Image 1 (cartoon, helix red, strand yellow):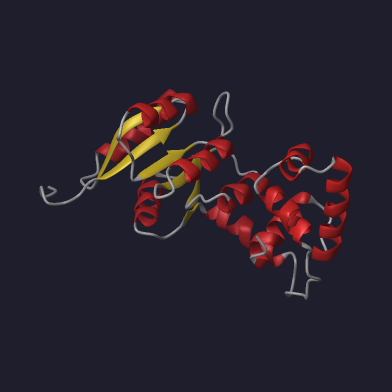
Image 2: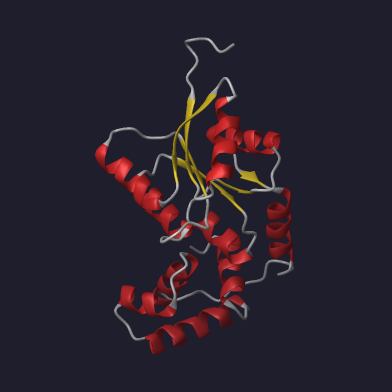
Length: 218
């Protein structure tokens, strides 16, 4: 039994699959040091809660496959609105680009919905205590992605504008959005991207993002 002096970790869930959300909530509430006060099936309900109350979670379990607003966008919003709240991705997607973008945008961990209860609870506690949590397939994917580039080679310095373009690329923006953010044409964005790819020795957006994260370029 947990003592009254023990502080419970308050976890909120953003998940549109009701049955799965109930299962996770029951699992969390069965633990003496964890509690789940709220479950939201979409981002709008979460934002309303944050707007009209002072309640805040210690950790947010976030699905990426949400209706109406992409989970990666929600993650970016939360990192801005609640910078002290840890976010643990819990999703069915093992898409490489989404994994990289989630980690780059501040997620403290990335677990697949196939994780067993012990793995999920362990991941939650790891993140709460300042560590990271990755499902085994995700950790393997990241390591293989890094290893694929071989030994660390010298990289020609990027210009300030190329760094800006790469920064927004890592955040998941498309070329049109990058052009709007930097007040330049899409043609100019293409020109900078070609230069970035050449300097990083990569051939695609996914490779550029992976190398940027690995080398700490953004």
